[in-house]
Image 1: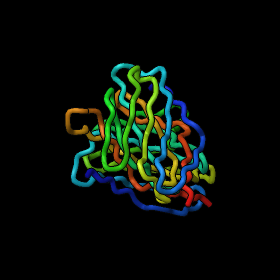
Image 2 (image 1 turned 60 degrees about the vertical axis):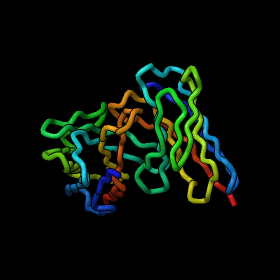
Image 3 (image 1 turned 90 degrees about the vertical axis):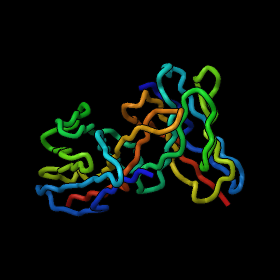
Length: 108
Length: 120
């Protein structure tokens, strides 16, 4: 699987948009970009995934650059419950390999 | 949506004993399940991949004789930690893959809630 690079930690004010970047410069043409998050002592939770186009669901938006070498996960209105470790993963779909992720702290 | 039920959520066992962790897919058939281990303040580490009806594939450095994985049915996979020792204390998480619907394609991966194992 292609490797990803994410900032170790980020802060966000409650109610504001949280923009989490991810670099995946070695991504292959058949690899998807997945985002998961893990709240302390729980199993990871699926957020969104994409291939080439931007995607949006009820949780978040995923913006993928045209060259696909980076992406941004956007939580439009962060709440305290969004405090978690966010993982960006690229894979052709056979398995998920987790990197270090970004620890997002949403503050009042 | 697809749900994976994992239990127990926590277990304490004595050193030298064995512990079994179960992972069930509810309302869908999981041909492939994954087992991860997570130490405090670290990321998830893939231990093994199991396919229904066949032997599990273990990642490098994971002892297959110590971590026995059985995936005998399309809805149940088990991980047995044999002769557990304190260094096996960790958070164990299972996951099942399911083909995502819609035009986007790809797979969805649903995770269990995890099992906190403490070996004393």
